[in-house]
Structures are given as structure tokens and as C-alpha cells.
Length: 96
Image (cartoon, rainbow, N blue to C red; front, top):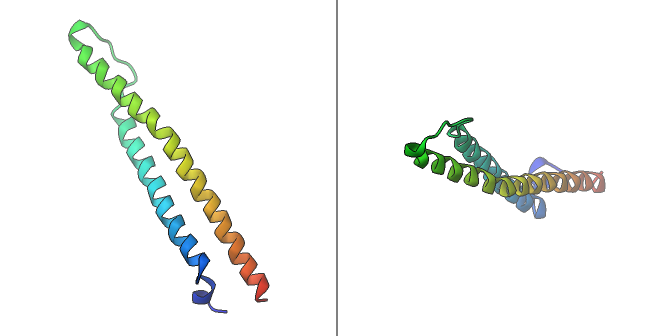
């Protein structure tokens, strides 16, 4: 059995799905990193700078709203990778 035969059928489709899910996961992490870099640790605000505080609150909401999709795509990517590895080993043992 050569390498091309090993990645045919369901294993190939699972690998494609894993690649897409992992790409989405990495994009979400990159986007969260970009948003986090714009977040200030402390802001000393008077009444004239309320718009800065509002912008920071909106930024924090965006960062927090990304936490669930990042976690779910990471878990999905990991589970798919384990399934792919399991199927690859199973096929290898079956053809041994």
C-alpha cells in the first residue's frame, strides 16, 4: 500500500475537513491576537474621554465573543486529527 492509497476515500475527506477547521482555528487565534494588541491595560478617564472607554468596552466584548468559537474550533481540530490518526493506523494494521 503506497501513500496515495492510504489517503483515499474517507481519510482524504476527513483530512480536507481537518485542514479547513484548523485554518479557521488559526485565523480566529490571529484575529483575537490583533484585537488583544489594541486593548489597553489601564485607562485614566475623565468625562471628555468617555468615547475611549466605550471603545475599550466594545473591544473587550469582541475579544470575549471570540473565546467560544476559538475553543470549539480547536477542540474540533484536535478530535478530527485523532480520528484521522486512528483510521490511518487501523488501515495500516488491516493491510499488514
